[in-house]
Structures are given as structure tokens and as C-alpha cells.
Amino acid sequence: MTMTEENRRLRPWEIALMIGAALFLIFGALALQTQAQLADRVVRLHVLANSDSEEDQALKLQVRDAVLDRAEALLTQSEDRTEAEALLREHLADFEQVAASVIMAEGYDYPVSVELEDTQFPTREYEGFTLPAGEYLALRVLIGAAEGQNWWCVVFPPLCTTAAAEVPAAALEGGLSEDQVGLITEENTGYVVKFKVVEWWEQLREKWGG
Image (cartoon, rainbow, N blue to C red):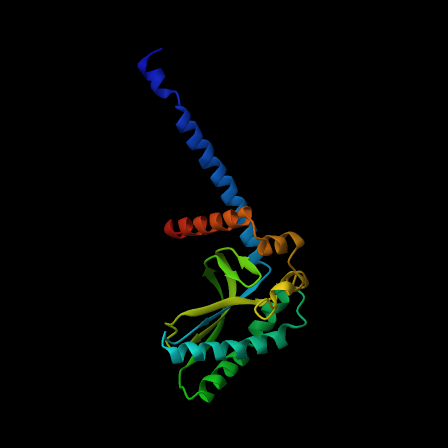
């Protein structure tokens, strides 16, 4: 055997590395598909405070509560995300008015805007469920300069205001499949690893420019 032929033979560690990379790619693709399927079923809520001051953070929570109340009343008859999105888009001005009323009542003159936009989120744990990192449709409430810590949750299905024990039923009613509900509510190693892979892939995709 010549030196060239010997050099071409893969070493065991190189084979193991290639197998590991292939498995990572396959697992990553499946995890991203899982995230995309979840994203097609939910609408997130994203409230951004004017600043990180104690007063602005407290105001953020008051605006959040008012927006959640309005959204819950509006979306109570929505059977899936398509219906929920249509209703939210139709009532964006109403949400702005609700938020502005709270801000004014608390003695502030911050402008406020409300939009429904695709937004990037990290993996986020809530009471009773977790959603993987990725892009989701979000009802975004921007208060003043919108430079403070923000608040995230899920406005449809109404998981923000649902007790942890009732999350599975609310998610099923909102159009998630039993497998999807099991995925976001279970607590085991596979669940954590799968969501972490999604986060790694999202970070790589952002680094590589999509």
C-alpha cells in the first residue's frame, strides 16, 4: 500500500465524527420541522417596556394584563390560528387604544404601537409548558422607546392565563395535536435535547444569514 492510499483511509475518529455530524443534521432538521409545526398553531404575545426602570416595568405588566383581557375576550370563539390571526389583525387599533388608556390612566404620555409580526424567540419555559426557539407570529406591544425588558407568552391558544394543570386541554382546544401537546408539556431529557438542538440551529442560521 502506498503512502497516498494509506492517507486516504479514514481513521476511526474521523468516521465517528462524520456519523455524528450526519445524525446532528438529521436530528436538527426534524427538530426544526417540529418547531415550524408548533409555530403554525400558536400566536405569541410580546410586550416591550419603555425602559428597565421600576416604574416602566410595572407599567408594562399593567398594559400586559389589559391586552390579555381584551385578547381573551376576542379570541374565545377562535378554533385555530388562522381565525385568531384574522381577528387580531382586524382589532390592532383596539389593542392600541386599550394599551394607551392604561398608560394615560397611570399618568404617562408614552406613545404605544401594536403590531402582528413574525418574531424570533429563544427557547422559553412557562408554567406548565415550554416552546422551542424559532420564529413565531407575535402580537407585539411596544411602549414608548421599547428599550426595556420584555414579556413573552402565548395569546393563542390562551396559555398565558391558563393554570398549568389545564394547559394540555387548552392547547388541544386551540388546535395543537396530542403529540405537540405532549412535546411542549413533558419533562424529560429527550424533550430538553430536542429543544436545545432547535436553538443551536436557529443560532447557526442567524449567523449564516438564513
